[in-house]
Image (cartoon, rainbow over all chains, first blue to last red; front, side, top):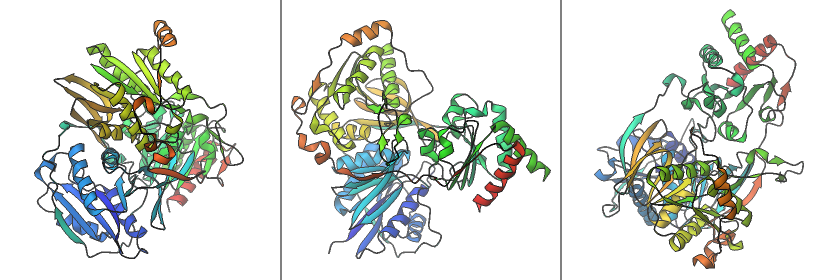
Length: 331
Length: 261
């Protein structure tokens, strides 16, 4: 019987760190195949490093059966076409049943290039994955989060991308005895279509990291001013949360674009999301759907977010925030 | 310079409502140009303003999507064609990219740049642009915020990365996938509207572009939708009215404490 293989692309970020979604997908893959006989979870790494030991170790911890490394000086700088070539060649050799990429900016660029090269199908931004009769059933939100679609792929490999944080790392992963293989793909005759000229850091507030926050307070156009956002920051500081914003608030100049949540901004996975003066257009909801609990405060009882919240409060955001800060300070 | 812009007509997703029978009600839902595609069009027009260019817009879809092409012509696009065939219907992103690539090879092969929206507001897969680039065997840059310059057969762009911006140089011809931005998309002028009204917009089917239709549509697409369903809502959610600011603040603080566990 042929081995049932799931490949996971390991994304290495600019600062040489492994993108957490690569571990999340490895752990998810290990969980998906746990009842399938003669199965293998393999991680594909493309890069240029002296030493992969610690990376291999981490992937072992999350259940990788095999790590395949394509190491070449040429991969020091990311190039979509060269990475595409390397990954595609490994996949042709390995013939996996399923391939996962993180739906990061790099993953969303590479996955369709690889899928097209392999002449197979790809499902983007999945929020649920299942294997039924060895077929991948990938569910994703569509129409701005109004509809969920379960998508199957007729060709092999069946490919899918998943956003960071959709699948959380298991608290007690099963460590595997991981096999390591260094491989080589000749990409030197491929055209290097793109070149990175410069990396320009953006203002990023490390104390206000939306990706890992458990409590997020976000404001929309209904916040009315930048001063009210300052109050929101105070509220966040007092309760151990961070602050986000809707596109409306960013466009109005109340908040920095690094704080933007939604389809064009960040996707968040907080335990509690509190929306002040956000109407809840589909574009915004697409970014917050995987939060555990949603509370919204809005003047308009008919704002779309009200029906999509665990608790919808009809009221004035400014007044309520002021009162919350006051109550916390008087404690 | 020859530029192609890919334009998709999408339902205004804000208008789509669920019926009581758990089906999507698209009655009275307006069709609009996908927002990212408007920015892709604007980006192409800005290149034309600076360097001069002939811009061709392409849309694959049902015949009524022609109105989207007339709209971009009214903004300043030079010409356009539709790709319409019942065998194209229900194509996934892979099949759509195949049709687009073949039409470009047949009808407008000498392009320098193809501008696409980064993603469509209905499907939001962001796959068609990259897949198109791979089918054509040309450069690709995604998540593009702005074009800095075009010179010596290269385009230099600013790309939005996860937590920073990169400056990327790509060889022409290239597919450039454009994000929505904070700049304005131009409004059509009266002259443009008149030109759009009179514009001849050819409609090509599979045969016209020498495309073997078995590679498109539901049958030719590698993926298919097994089922579509309503996302788990927060139906047991409650709405609170008429609380004072004090009562609301207390409720919020206690709920946050409870939920964070």
